Image (cartoon, rainbow, N blue to C red; front, side):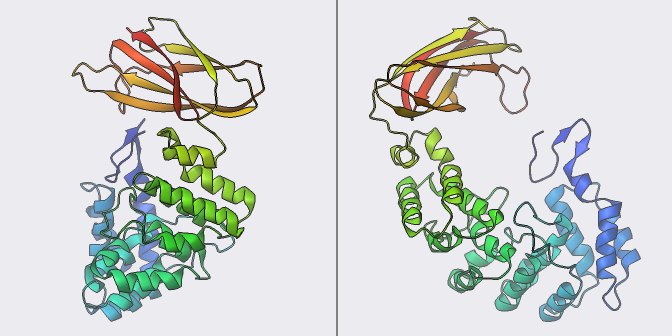
Length: 380
């Protein structure tokens, strides 16, 4: 199922926005705010539910903020106090991963940006610090980075050592150059490397996954800097070798697909070694809706670790080139001993994300990022 920030992706009747925002979840939110003096939970529930159906996912968040704000003090310092008083308990501190929180708890972040950005920066950042321990504030820290870069970075410098791992993760996730769904930030993308230098040693996977994703973002523009820092992290020994190996592989996944020499070498896959490669494609031609059988045989005259991928150059009626890299396998070649890898590649017809068209297609085998063999196949 394809999902976007409007929550409109559907598959067999599934609606993400309806799963996240419905009578039950909005009822939970109403019960939380009922602790505030003068807050009418029944009024909030009625108003909020009445406005859901016509709105997408992120629009629903803004709508919930509208309905809650209507019953909060108008002055931001008092509003922030009320928002904090209505917060549920922090997310379970004993967990170390996959504890993003509930979307209904994004409201404090929305109101922090809406009413605290210009005239109450420090109080708004305090609110985000508390709120991100219930639901990630990665979207809402970014306007502060754009409006008050130095002051916000100074706050993040302190949060790197926060005792709550959700706050530490926010430092990495909120400064990502290519954060999905989020607004862009004007920050030099290399500035947050100082945060990642500390956070890569974090004991929680939730934080180190964010670090790895952040580094993967950076490989699009500064792959050499990413490799440099990953090497430095190895030298410091601040993270366990197993976890750092995971971070490194995850951080370099896009660079590896592009065949970046430094990234591949850091993972032990060298491009300057001799290896012979043969490629077989059957059936040929192959019908869209069926499957293409790919067989690749490799041989080297010395011990050689290999990362084998294949790239398809897709035929399109408009003449534009479309390519996609597919992972195949890693292997260890022994001198003179051939290794054969096989892959069944289904050719799905009518896919919503990538449409296949009849015509000639090119298959290229990449070994350690280098093109080593290619062949044509016709889709019919």
